[in-house]
Length: 113
Image (cartoon, rainbow, N blue to C red; front, side):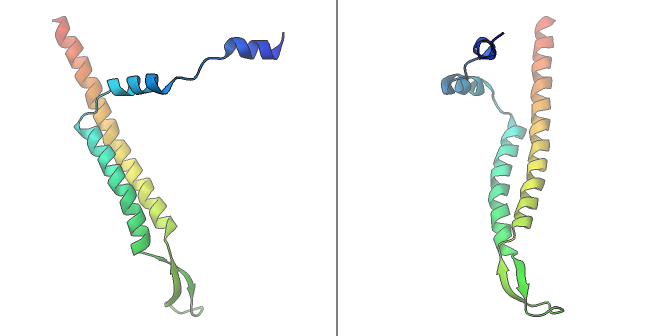
């Protein structure tokens, strides 16, 4: 058994951009999902802004002194804010997806009777 022949037999074509666009175009977002997407875009920008507003102290003037000599961008705050906003927006998106699934089930049950 030749490995290359098996790979050639099992190989499938990658989907084209037009077909991906058609699949995504069929899906409509409800209010919760739109809210989650817009909120994540806003929180992404706010993470960068908060990282700049609340800088981290890179070096201090002495060992037991609270004054910072130089400050730098706070990456840890930015990543933390992005992570928390991702979880929050994922929660809202999941609620919207559950609601859309329940709505489609309700429509299909309504057609039966």
